[in-house]
Amino acid sequence: MFNTKIAGIGMYVPENIVTNNDLTEYIETSDAWIQERTGIQERRYAHRTEETTTTMGVKAAEIALQRAGITAQDVDFIIFATLSPDYYFPGCGVLVQRAMKMKEIGALDIRNQCSGFIYALSVADQFIKTGMYKNILLVASEKHSFGLDFSTRGRNISVIFGDGAGAVVLQPTEAPGILSTHLHSDGESAEILAMPNPGTHANHWLKEKLANFVEAPRGEMFMSHEMLENGQNFPIMDGPAVFKKAIVKFPEVIAEALEKNNFKTTDIDLLIPHQANLRIAQFVQQKLQLKDEQVFNNIEKYGNTTAASIPIALCEAWEAGKIKEGDLVCLAAFGSGFTWGSALLKW
Ligand code: UT7
Image (cartoon, rainbow, N blue to C red):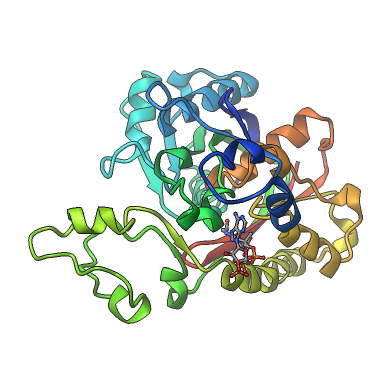
């Protein structure tokens, strides 16, 4: 059996920088509130009409392929992780296959929000280990700016999220590579952080969970005018509830990965937590008693880019020389679902 290595990594963020002060034009908020509660200073928004989740993903993928020393023709499987796809269906995987003129290879879409990259990495690892594929392209990309509520009503969510993409090429190796991945979920809290519409739920779950939800009339299962007027086309989040669960599950799933491989927290060269909120990352660091140089954060520049946040941070850390060959790197994520997970790898 082979192990899996990251043979190439790339990232792309749109040029358009949106500062906290820029948001105060539409939303009752302040730079001080956003920085104090989240650590975010600015984020990027994709071009409204010229950039999509897929086009950003392709830009990150091109860099990852070049760094792996392969071409799009060499890729034998695509995995795409996003919660903001170009289309309701089909997924972005096939759009990457088309845009990059790849062979008629398999394309799989992963819908695990903030943990999307770790779930995707775990799936890729299984395919590589069994020898089924030799060059898997994993793309994670988000265009949140298309669907945020830029009014005060949505301020707890809209100020957090940003756009961007990351990509990795995964290949077999005889060296250690990915040591283990650990995936979890708890669907009891599905509506605590969700974008229920458009959806086929017909308020089945929402009736008891969200009292103010407008009934979708029969035959209009996706979206009615009344639902739009009520802002039900936007994501919903109980921020404090997510925060409370995240600070328990992050340390737990990191400890699980360390224990599985007989490592201690002091062995970690770099922890890259999903960039949800700097306060969550700081809490995790403190709980695990990690030194500053053992944790990498870049949320201040990009906000929360959901599935893309880990590969973007991983790419920046690697480009900055913070990850060297043989380093023990831990990736961990928690988010909507709830889903959470970790991956431990030797670079
Ligand atoms: O990727 C995973 C996804 N999400 C997360 O991990 C999010 C986890 N949660 C969080 O990061 C935090 O809960 C938030 C940053 C979202 C919110 O911070 P908080 O300290 O939990 O604030 P809160 O929601 O408890 O709201 C406190 C106050 C409220 O006002 P009142 O009721 O005390 O008067 C909110 O209306 O802050 C108000 N508020 C804002 N004020 C200014 C909420 N959002 C904003 C805002 N600007 N953007």
